[in-house]
Image 1: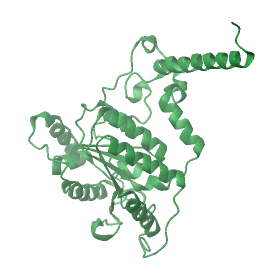
Image 2: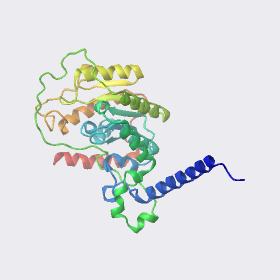
Image 3: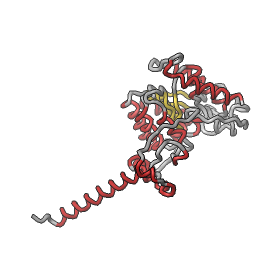
Length: 319
């Protein structure tokens, strides 16, 4: 029986789409980095280094833009609290990418707490960017299409793997000191900073994903005279209350960290240097130490590699 013309068209279209998606899947496997390192073409390798950590070994995952990886030191947190953590921070991180990195982390880890640094909540992105990010997650060839220039024979036959991890667990040591002008910083205000509706939706999805995996989402604002102010604090506090998410602002109130803006920033108040990061990490340890779902692994033989990593880190700080 001959199918009607409209049905034949639909059938041909479905077959064409299926073939196209199949080709995307095949080429994605070929061009994907074969390990999560720069030398294999991995983008944002430090953030993706969490995939090289032993499965279910990370207690806390930090997410956010450069404010996160210059403020939270996992190895210091380990030394002071016996808590394992990893910073999946990237420069200028928009929330669709935050969601993507969280999904990757949760595919390998079962953290008790996920900390989102709040600067990225105010970073604009278009619906088109969000759709592209989702497509790139489904078909990595859309993100790694330029790797065809460096493909080797092994890329055709080798399955992607993730065996590498960052020596500082995603943290970046900043040693420079450039004083900040803190006049007017966190001045009292009743204003509410604007937050795009799509950003709020992504925050809700991040919160939902955390809960589905048994993790608690926590919002934290790290000290910054350039990026943070009272209107932003007010908006995040309101948003956190609406969504029943714990929020800690290290710029103000009872959780304020005593930053010396003449000594503790590497670039005039935008990011913290190592001195500022040490203060923030100690404060973060106090906050996390109050959470019953987190316990210390200090002295546990299964985590001896963390002691070894901290020893290397401590020597770096002395240089």
